[in-house]
Length: 446
Image (cartoon, rainbow, N blue to C red):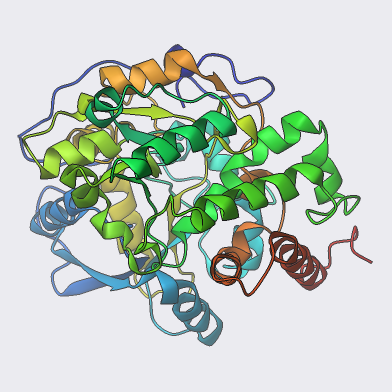
């Protein structure tokens, strides 16, 4: 996180990162990182890395090639479709099958429940790079005071999910950025009447539609102060919360009114930039690096051709705070723990962190001391216009939400297709939270 860009975030203490403008680098990544040797020393050693789709960037693969040239250690990336990833990973962890490094979504609940990090991962607290990670980010990978993950992920540019909109389309139809849900629906109705699908919503991946609900958590907590604490203490439920019911109903309305388009159920997240560049869609729920991604893939566009505003369910005008993202962990059953640590040391060296920022279109910064961000004018306008939330998104601030992400996605599809009501979806979330809490022997769920 970034104090010079973000401002004070209430009680959330975030270490200051040095922020500045940097142009896209074209030079190769550094061939030295931490204590890594300058000559190949581990020939014929292969480290197997297990990751979900889209979690490994091309820039990281390039960095791995440089790492192999320097050390002789080969990185074998094993990519699993996102819908299957957690089931496959959990099976491997429970069976002790061979995997050296694995990526998982950070978050205290996930570190305990999904990965059982104390039993399956290597303690990384004393690694040379550990103290350079933003403390709020490190906390999401820490269990009982021990750090188990290296979160090499842009927790702002790639984690602040907001509405990305095409400025030219808005200008053509004299539309202004909405500040309430009613205004948002008016914008959507105007676009639909003019043959433009208002929102590109890729539901087929199973996870994207879920974002709309947890991302609005800070607004729920603002409307009912202390809601997060009550949920964590088992003193409240989503089904009984008025704001949660309103948010889920509003999300369902967007689908039922056709604002997601006729092909939303088969749409793919990987096609987001292409569809936004086509001019057939005006908006999408996306990272605030989407403009950069579109411009990188379609050079006729500039990143600043797209703007950003907060997700408007519940009349929200807050920026989300989401310090948890895909995080590297070393399996404690690996026979190559030393080599895996060597890779993390290489990847997180200051020079290579900066190289990743400068050469990854959907990274604008990384949560490491000294990293220089590359915000454009549209992103800066978003930061300047909207106040940051004082609590993180639901999956980071409320226990037992993130582990059931896939289940929520399935339940939301049932809602969209008329097989479940918004209230039923919330009841299912509550029921799953109870199961997760009892499995964790949470004393608040006797």
